[in-house]
Length: 637
Ligand SMILES: Cc1ncc(C[n+]2csc(CCOP(=O)(O)OP(=O)(O)O)c2C)c(N)n1
Ligand SMILES: CC(=O)[C@@H](O)[C@H](O)COP(=O)(O)O
Ligand SMILES: [Mg+2]
Image (cartoon, rainbow, N blue to C red; front, side):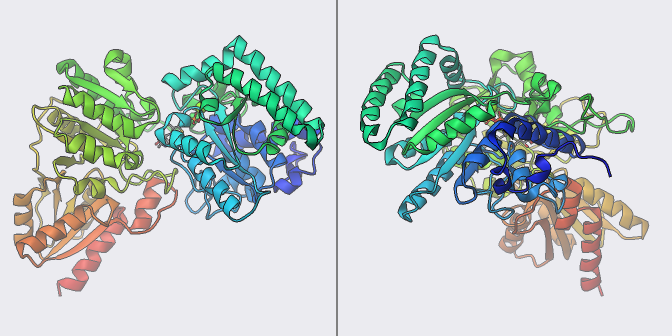
């Protein structure tokens, strides 16, 4: 049997095992944990740089805290791989993000060490505060609560709502600000500049050192002299306030910045902070990708790389199967640049996803007309509303699942204003390995009930391009276009622009036995299914609705007058989307066909490849064929 090179990590399955290791050996534990993450993720891709950056913090936290009794809340959770490995999941970590495997994010259903299910950013402070207050109410005075939040996630309004509330109620909460000066792309905005300032300012650091010296003394002195300490500390605090420390001004005690890669120092600091009650913040400076050269250099790429060689860092390319169709996000990015050249009213907005959404293409081509507003979906939408109120045409690109956070802004600050904002909802539908927190399956349903909003979903890349072209025509109002994660099928997609009339779908093919009504790119699964069934002599009609709102009623009258059996197909929740809209149409118009709805059932769908998940939900090619056969077997005899 091969000798393990992880002698210490091999002995650790749970934090109680970690606690048996001597402080002197913690550096070695960190090195082995880092190596484990590198080996696992090189072979089974996932989030990488963020977990490498918090190895020392993770080890120190589990060394000092009494988890799971103490609550440890990770923000986003993409950095929690080390946490998972140290809390009972080392042996199953190779199934990370896979179908029926473990989740890529902390998940309450998966482990008692995951105190909160996460995936969307900036929830940690509010959730941790809730836990700290609950502990207070239950009289659990010994129970500690820690939130770990990145500098990127700290830019969201929700994080500040949590800070504001925490400061007002004096609960025992430690917020660890993991500052690596990066989001997925470089972090932006005033807070980012502020954090850089307090990290580098000489005067500030002198005051900080005084605080640490006092803290050291505090641990050695007896309780009777603590009052004296507090007096001195209040004096220091006043100086800090004079330095305009934002967190101090919010009534948090601010400590740091500290080196987030010095595990022994972190253990000491965290132990010290456990003795200080009330809301406090520890500012840790870390490097995203720490310990893997390439990941430290190109931090955006290595946020979530594909497979790579764990020794050399070389990316392992998938087999070359000839020219590939583009990713939908790239069709969006390139088309936006083309349109912005033609129409000078167009501007682009992304909440912290320039690379993921391909807004970076407009940022490169026309930097003055593209805005990365930080992780701030609500602001991104209202900011777009303001731009549009002054005659601009904002293309606001947001992942469908993150748009959930900005629902009121869609209604109140765009639709109600009657302005021309184009929402480009990327990752619409099941997204795959990110799982339940990230599936973009609700937008069709939650957008459909908003008045004054046009809702479209392209069948393919050419339609995406043309819908974007259509949406920026005069007086189009609020317009939402959703498209999936990944690639389409059309290689030659850059064709002449064409207007796709609002509220008009298309008949893709005639047929007698049954009709499929689909919306969006999932329609290609129906195309494949129909092709297969035609070989067996079946005749299936297929309509691509293209617009969910307004619905193409003319087309629907045609469908209902010809067909008794209709299947609706959408890569979205079955409650409230296309299927529901078609049922409403049928009822309103007195038709009596049989409608079978295919889409995401009313339950949580976990992680897997997109194909595995389409299958699980019954709307991959085989699932569609099975449904057609079932419907026809039941109703044609
Ligand atoms: C509401 C929401 N918007 C966007 C994202 C996408 N996202 C995931 S991680 C991340 C960057 C987070 O930056 P930071 O908190 O600094 O963590 P780091 O990756 O630097 O460790 C973003 C934008 C998300 N998960 N949730
Ligand atoms: C953690 C997080 O929210 C992002 O990193 C997300 O996983 C990105 O998804 P894509 O890979 O689809 O860009
Ligand atoms: Mg960061």
